[in-house]
Image 1 (cartoon, rainbow, N blue to C red):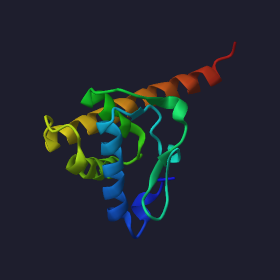
Image 2 (spheres, rainbow, N blue to C red; image 1 turned 180 degrees about the vertical axis):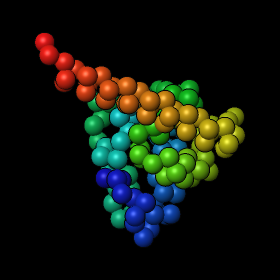
Image 3 (cartoon, rainbow, N blue to C red; image 1 turned 135 degrees about the vertical axis):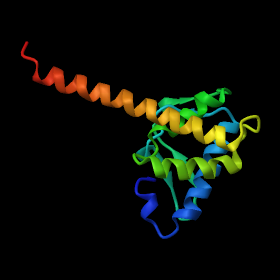
Image 4 (cartoon, rainbow, N blue to C red; image 1 turned 120 degrees about the horizontal axis):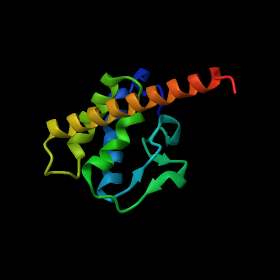
Length: 131
């Protein structure tokens, strides 16, 4: 899977191909709704494959919906930003500038992280609650 890609010697090449792969998916309207590192596989030739296909939507055209894919690809914002810049080179959304595209990606990620924080807090509260 793609977890830990930033530690690889070929991280720049891998990231570029990964951005290209995501852009290809989006150009075809494919959106993976659980786009986490464990659900993205690749080989030494940088051929990417998705797993957990029951979470895939097809015929999605709204850039903001598709760019939400980036919200959970990497836990660190700087790495998400690097990937967003690579994606921008191949983006099928020519009506969206590269800067706007990166801003949308980072905003979707921040919303997702706030959502996860709230869910984690609720989970902790429920575990401590005596029924």
